Length: 291
Image (cartoon, rainbow, N blue to C red; front, side, top):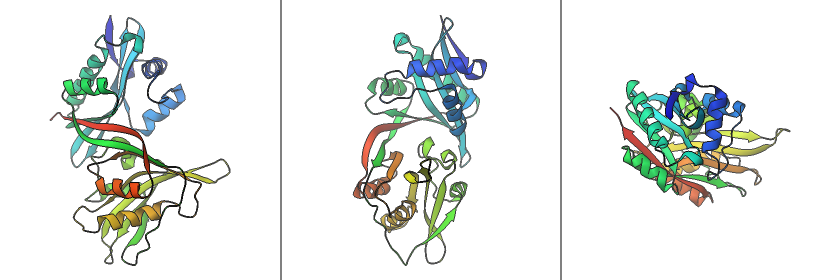
């Protein structure tokens, strides 16, 4: 018999068992320990109250972890992972989990429910579409392993370094981009605001640097880099910001960009491609309007 329970009413051990069995054999390794699962729930602002676990009799066989954030007066929900044990698929468990999730989000007055899915995962995408989700953009996770990053030297623009949370106050902040690119997901990160000659904010970037045990800078993850959409020099502003965000003095650093929207961040996508970034994962970005 199938039962759907809130994660708050389950043990973490049950949740991790459902996660690991559901993502076994996935496109990449998502195996979690209890510690990693709890850390991800915290870092991504996922909620035990909003998340659901499926039980077949007493065995945890699937789950969806969910979170809610507010942007411009609207509540945005995010499905941070849907997993069903491979031995229990084709039993309607994924559909029941999604239906329970949508009911919970509606009860919390969420306006929009969002999720990402691997582009190759046609079965999951079809399930989401059957429940009212639409593909609104295509995403790429980009990587550049080696090689210098060109720096655009400019006397027109200036850089101001700020905490990432200040980016959320900019009128052109892309708060409807995928959840994991939001400033809230950038723990211990850095942020830049590009200004024109009058001190007006015209672009931003935020990112996190990674270091080895001996303090060597080994990688940089860029979450967002955008310019004010009304400007004719968006490309130059983005080039300037990327040059300032990335370390141009070393060719031993791995650069990574998660979940970049190809349509809504088309200029950033173009600039990164010109810099030699290549896609390593392709996804679709889906949403459903609830209110």
